[in-house]
Image (cartoon, rainbow, N blue to C red; front, side):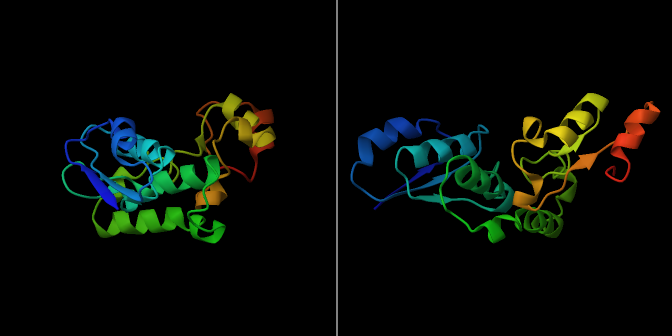
Length: 171
């Protein structure tokens, strides 16, 4: 078994995988110094890694490590890996928000992928109308899959017909 820690934020996972990982069980521990921990983790998995160390919200030394709240939905919903159950995945947002609150970083969660408050927020009349008629066109996944919710925000100046269309569905 080989474990490789990319302490310098190295983004050459494929090169290392091709050189070292043939016919071996591989796990990776990736720091986010260059903002590439998630990308490197996905590349490592595609190259054959079967273990990725990470943490909720990516909290860790220096700039953090692989963010499991972003990695798990991608692996399960986009790449088809059964890494967690549907029930476990549906608790992702509440867990991420609770951990953020515990470590005093809840104010940083609004823009987080999958679990952030704004990821499923729609503001313009065009987007709101489109997401109401065809959510898959404007959202990468159904927000409920990761325990998040859709938010429809009314713009400052709105037509009466628009307001009637979104009645009862607006935050």
